[in-house]
Image (cartoon, rainbow, N blue to C red; front, top):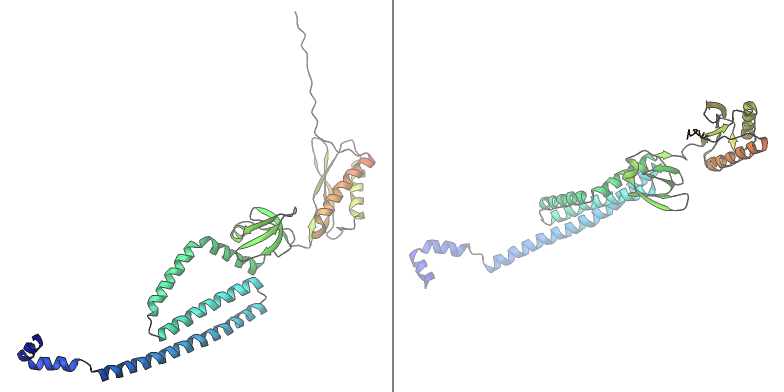
Length: 295
């Protein structure tokens, strides 16, 4: 009834509104066009995804090949290759979604915000990761080296992206975060092929100093593990309170350092005993004065 009254009141406006309503044929044609367009975009999106993924894998292999020829560490090589693949796949997915009409600008902003939040949450881990990359790239030490770093000392067992595994001489395993290693000094006792042994020996003032020095020179020359180049050194360094200090500085191979030093120290003690040389030690004399009691 209301429609009839409206048509009677303004027949031209009613005719225009009626003609603006699409017919079922037009709706069907529009659905077919939109469906065809969406189907084409869907097919193109799938093609972009699979072709992009194939290209990303090829690029990953190329990047790994370049880094392998540059003699990158295998652990770092695989890690960086996976990061490169993840970044390339992110762009491929965004391009595929953009073909479907998805607003990728908002999606990229969401991903960036999520990445920032994850980065802040994993700040310590990222610091260790950056330190691990520096250790692998600059190689201040390698597996098997005896180092002092991160507040501890031991033999390097494994070098990972986030931490370094060390083994102590008494066979304990230590996991040291890489950031602690790079933030302080690193002493690599195995970096050089040779090391110098420093031993200070003290003899008594009543001993024959020339004979003591000759004995020490004989020890150095008779030990095959001690090198003659660089030239060793034996000399008096101090006239101490208890005796004469003599400094011995022979050279040996780095792998023979500890055994050679221990054997040399033992042979010095035994040789002093055989030859009657004295090894003085601090002594203290106590004098007691007794006062006479007048009573």
